[in-house]
Image (cartoon, rainbow, N blue to C red):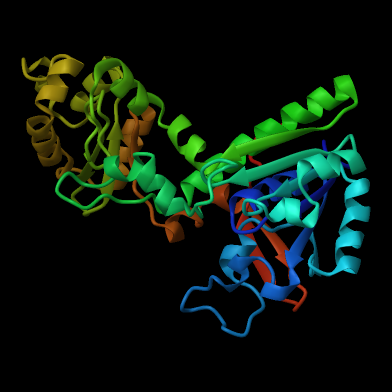
Length: 356
């Protein structure tokens, strides 16, 4: 039996963050009913199609990414019968997930205050862009820009760059999942539901981790440095092999650095006064990278990777998605589902932890 078997979740959210939360619960056995806006053709992402996608298909690959295992219903909540039907479902629900624009939930009587009177055990979970009182629309790239992510991301001589997935949405989804789980635990103790809210902006700032700490404690303003780590070297440097394969190095200890130098036939670098400590390697990382690149060119990728893996030295191939999904481990993470039009849709699991 799955952990949330019997839990009733109603999803009034669209795009990525809210639906990702709904899919999390669906994967763990909950009955998730996704209510979509009939007047707009449903979730906005149904129409976010790649140029190569069938224009006549009812939904996009993007939509499928976070909408597995749900029941779908299209309602016009401006119409009384549809709204009353939704309220009847909400009266029996455990969790509702929403991302209404400010004032939208109150106008429809679907805010926490109204629904908690209808169903005192209901957990009301909502996502906003900048907080409940800010009217600005919020899209992931704007949040990445405003919370410092884009300023730090990219090559030193390149433009500020967003992450290639809507990372703020996904991180906010994780925050909301955690909040709902805590609210469910609290309900077990008190018998009462509650309200859980999260904003994309708060999530973006809260996820800055060591970069925030470097600023707050040291007044160090992070700059774009590609994949390189600001505190460790060599870490994040990319090197090309004899067969022109890109590998990325992430040595986090002195032992790993020394082992890498030995495997590359450059053991003397570990004793070089410019590189003998991490602090010195950070200071002289460009010179070190140049010497390591020369050494990597003496090896075929498969050969040096095998040696590094055997010696527990963290060096990894940089794969494209074709190569990623050729791996048996990745194949195990694919969820398939038949769509109403008979097609098979695919996406990756959002739940990858093992519960024993």
